[in-house]
Length: 194
Image (cartoon, rainbow, N blue to C red):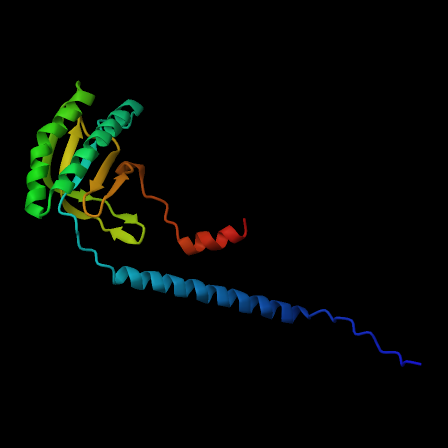
């Protein structure tokens, strides 16, 4: 006959052991998050923030009304290929400046055609542009050489475009307030619990 073997039941862990395990996991998660934040900070510090683009374009709509924003969008859609063509025809910065200067009359004509009842101004000046993030690049808030196309009062939300590298943004109205700050690590972690 076979001897009887005692059954070994799994003993439940004590409450202290369970709490200790959770504390270890939380500490590991916090350490991981801190490492990611430090890496992001280091990458930001060593990123070159010098302006590569010689000229930017900005279109200021008359107001935030749907009609005025649609006019701004039509103008933007029509002048963007003109700017791209000038860029394609240019091999030097001086040639690009000449090409863009030759487009000024055409840009004003496009704006006047789409907004015949408003005053249109196009001026090249140093203008303040807000900070923007694009993929892994950060465009700091700074003064940039820019063409500013103003439709009417120019108090509406606006659009701006950088020539080198080619990026275009819709800007939020400055009076709307600060944008909500989001951290990708926190968004990623909270997505686990949704």
